[in-house]
Image (cartoon, rainbow, N blue to C red):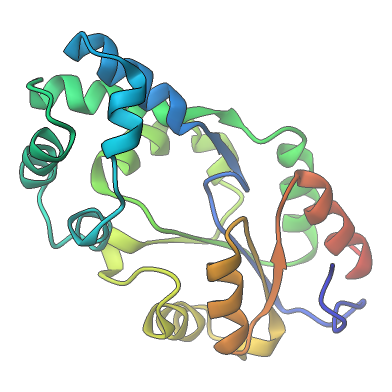
Length: 209
């Protein structure tokens, strides 16, 4: 359901999450690649993987890649190299979300676009050149491991709103996770839960874009 405040002229900026909003991701591909490297069942890895504080620290840039992979080695009980972990880690990216490219192009003609993603340096190094054309629609991209803050923390939204330079209530935020939507709304942004590209199209239509 779209926020009730979406109407023509109601936004001065659009803010997009990246994963499953702009770029499609599939963690199953990560598990399959790691399992192939380790010679074990994918189910074993899937059951043991936990997005814990080390994971969050990696996204904030406070945990190094080497420390993160060493943690995964212990957590998952697999003895593969950092290079093999990295190979699987970057297998998560599938391609652009269906239909997102023309929507971003149209939106960028009407309003300034920004992106805000919880991510880590290896993923940034991988997706930035690969999707440069798609990401070129954004005036600025806020990355958790670069700013040291991650969604859904209030400080993260406050940082991004201040950097964009317009009132929070004049920013429409798109994300695929309910917790991030709730955090954004608590910080005063208008927020749209994205289940498919159609939700973005509907919000743009409501904004008269």
